[in-house]
Amino acid sequence: MSGLFNKQPSVATGQELQNDVVLANGPEDSVSDIAFSSQSNHLSVASWDGKVRIYEIDQSSGQNQGRAMFEHTGPVLSARWSNDGTKVASGATDKTVKLFDVQSQQAQQIGVHDAPVRSIRFVECGPTNTPVVVSGSWDKTLKYWDMRSPQPVATVALPERVYSMDSVAKLLVVGCAERQICIFDLNNPQQIFKTKESPLKMQTRVVSCYPQANGYAVGSIEGRCAIQYVNDAEQSKLGFSFKCHRVQKSNNLSGGPTSEAYPVNSIVFHPTFSTFATAGSDGVFTFWDKDVKQRLKGFPSVGGTISSTAFNRDGSIFAYAISYDWSKGFEYNKPDTPNVIKLHATKDDEVKPKNKR
Image (cartoon, rainbow, N blue to C red; front, top):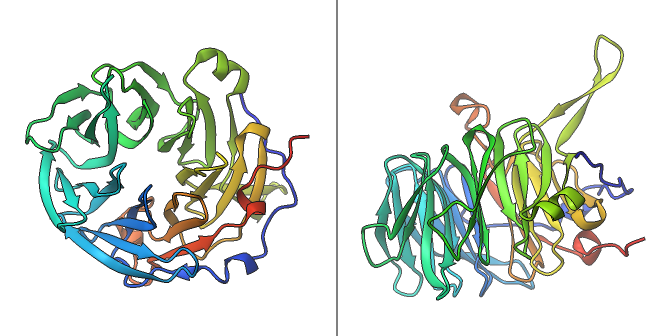
């Protein structure tokens, strides 16, 4: 079911972005993944330069400084924080999974795949909430690591390569190649709970779970986003998809305006309001409210592709990476391509749900 967001007169002029703070001493190559700790204003940054950097950010001023760094032998595609904020796990094209202890500043390899590791999450499994790292790879497997043993505690065969993965509470959603989506109930982490085909016609770029853990959003390479629910009854009542990240082009030969669609690279949910942001290859990020199908605020292009975004723990900071997303292959990664991470202080009128009519 396709739905349209109510287009409010909410496009920003760009003034709102002028005070956004640049992250100092950023990566030397494209940014693949950024994530905030849920315990503090520390940001992890995974990069194609093979490094994971950790920054400390002052919430009131946005002032920031690098605090730690560890390395892989290939581009790092994902890095995420443990729930208690003491560790960062990462996965890279060198096929390894690493665990970094923030206090001791020591990194160790805790896992390996047969192909590049695309996505990493810390999850709590089973009735005892056992903390493990889960890694999704292009080798078409999901592996769970207990952080103390080099052997995975479980390996799950998937229908296709992993392109994106996200988890909240006991919900784990894996977006695979060929538009396959695998849903896991982490009470039973070794079994795929449900396999679905993405409602979007083109390749899946990103999946992101709702804070309520009852569903997920999917973004595709053709500028579309789908709002999905795990429960079939909820899905038939509340699920929909909409167009985003499209740029109007001047009239074509047939006389009508055309729009060019861009990949949706990132979808992140606000931790307090459950509104969400999408960001894409068009260099634009937009805040939305899925429950009333409303666009809250759209911003003009930031001057380069946005590859990854993140809200901090209370949603007062929205970080976005202006960086090449590799959507057009290596030949488009030119020396003058911007590579910068910015911090945007969110205002309530940007991210807070409007009153329901």
